[in-house]
Image (cartoon, rainbow, N blue to C red; front, side, top):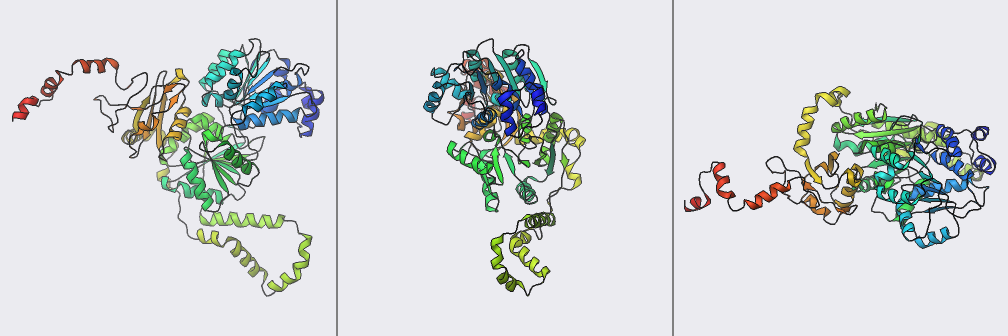
Length: 598
């Protein structure tokens, strides 16, 4: 506690964190607390999730509050309901011995009228999600005109979730003299832009390089054929009996299917995706946090802002399309100084993306062989033995000992052990008695240089042959990001397992590649979809002859990127005389009338 005192914290706040077991500040806390206490500079702080960011800004802000004033003085914005609730709970714990401090959380999915009543009673610190706070401001249920500190927690996540306009609206409602503290795990261009717009000469603090992965996380990968991905996942889970993990998938359909298969195979798990109601989501999270679920299968969208301690593994069943998302995924393990493992299960086509992730996070993935049957059984048996040895004898069992001795007296120690293990692990031993080796031959795995350079041409041909390119009429100027695209596709396309290729976001439009795999009328699924008020309907990008891979010719919205307007006008103007000219040009030699007579 002496170290926290040296940073400038005093009185009741120190008593509160002492009860929580705080002894030494984390690196981000050491750097941030003095800056916030001085209150002279805005701040951009870059640190991985799980490094103690909430205490870094929360402790000094709580100490500086004027409890004689009932107005909102500190505003903390977070991207999700779960993170909002977690921050509020932490702040209440820190201010345990400061009963006059009022911390209120507001977020969607709950009764807004109750939140309005709570705010009317007085509030010093308001923790909010951007959407709900905008509603409250527009209803004039809350005033943030006297706020002297604004915290943007997980700023990159808020922008990825499409809260750019809400943030602009909220920050415009706060006083210009406020101090703004921006915290982020990654630093994409959008975060840099909002920092330049709303922060004045900010001091920059970082406990690592931009977008770099946490040092406490080990990165591993298994490379198998696409058809073997689920069986690989199953063996990885079985080989780590004490696993407590989140499995990330690309789509909500995949999340449901994998959770269903794992549950059928006897693993305690459930899925978290966008189709769940808030009550269902809360139930799943309560069971996962209490460890009644061994694994949680989730999409990136559903898992945003989750704050779960002591995760041993994060498993990437699908690599994320947005490479920066990998930093957020892997950062959910290895928190608070603990070690964690981030696993990627990939097929041969994903090796290049894996190398790009390595370059981004400045970490190298370690190749692991898929566990065989013998390895899985050994891990399960030794784990069971350790549990038996660690069990405390129950005195109430003494009265049954004589009867049990009589039951087993004709068995030797070896025979008794065999029977117990056969009873407990009979199905497992039978399942893994003679299983296939899923590891790819070394010549098929390739090395780093071959993956990126030697196969570039063949990879381009493969993508060209399998993927269809679409364009949508929203881009960077509309606040559109690759994650927004994935969210919209996942929520509106009923087909599971769609492969998505490259995504290129331009100023006024976005182009993306998708392997339709026989899916008909892809664009029709988005007829009633919009983004920030703009219609979102994909149009297939034609080649230079105006042809596409299928016959969908739908194009809606405010811009036509696949066909310039002047070309459309010219076609309409020349409609009456185009037939004769075009046929002669093609060398057909006959007009429509001449061919008919013939």
